[in-house]
Image (cartoon, rainbow, N blue to C red; front, top):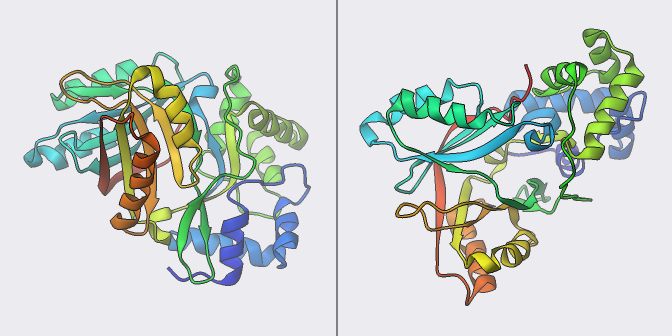
Length: 330
């Protein structure tokens, strides 16, 4: 889609860095962008309505909120694909669901507020669908940060997240008030001049207390960042490739750190194998405007992993079945 210079500057700059400490944070952002506060708020509303933004607000980290999350996959017969999609998408703990080009053709993310809650959800899915669910929990996170950059010609690509921190800290234990804040903000912040005051009034909190709680969740990594969440498909990154690699287990951490450091990798994890079904242990998400671009980037990973990589594949997503963001609180 075609973006104005202001829209492009806003997306490039404010996928994070929301100034919680400011009395009127959108005004402070507008000053940096050289526009008025009203112009910026109107722009965010417009981008959201047009689908260029999924939302504007916090990105929460389930594993650092005392909860749990996992990636799972199913082999779904073609004649049952629509039925199974409906069953899985109706489960509130399922945040993302993709059709991917592989024998395991449906891949979805499950997130729960209870650290022991993932297993029962996967069992529920197995029983409801009558199909084997393969669990791929994160064993090590090398990098997670999808940040988009749009150039003057409208071309979009991924870039490293500014000031990225890979948190391996003790989980933030949310109390009842934190959970209310999460529930109220996981779909986005109020798009008004002073969103914290509006939110504090809604939650019957003091503005200062609300601000401090959000900042504390940022410090611990429970909130990865607060800002614009672009819809990368709508902006032109329509090729989504989950590259998977079979590398020796004893070298997996070292090699995964190298892969996660590549500028174009947005997610990189170590995950378990499943004997006889799934041989790969290193996962790296790569995006591009076309499949050829993703394959070129995957070839760079292959060169990096040579001679240690024994096999690899790229699972393209052919359909987005569900994408709501993680719903962690209730």
